[in-house]
Length: 97
Image 1 (cartoon, rainbow, N blue to C red):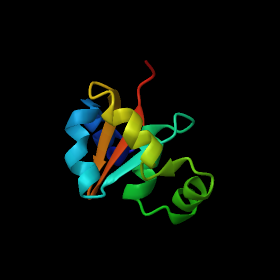
Image 2 (image 1 turned 180 degrees about the vertical axis):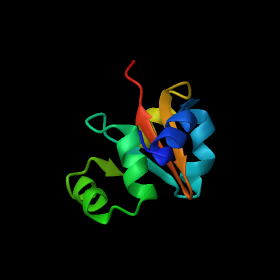
Image 3 (image 1 turned 60 degrees about the vertical axis):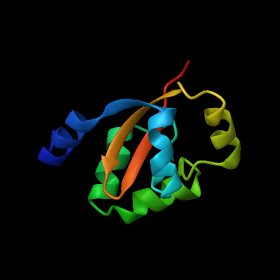
Image 4 (image 1 turned 120 degrees about the horizontal axis):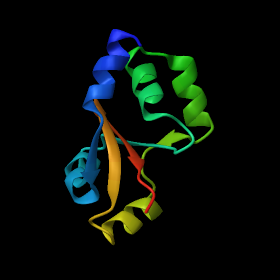
């Protein structure tokens, strides 16, 4: 495991939706599909791996939260996410109920 990947793996945390709202308000949250590994995405962003990141954007595997998602999460403030901070972004991945 690379040093970066090792460092990133130590910073994965779990957060409730309520805790993420300030980051959404500053447009810093990126939603990562459950089809992707959160660490892979974080590592690609940190390493400026533009081809991978662009492919995931094009395939809608990473995106800003949609209005529909925001509405659902606002109705469930205890909704939980795996999170990983890659400044200036907060990567989030829903935890299945």
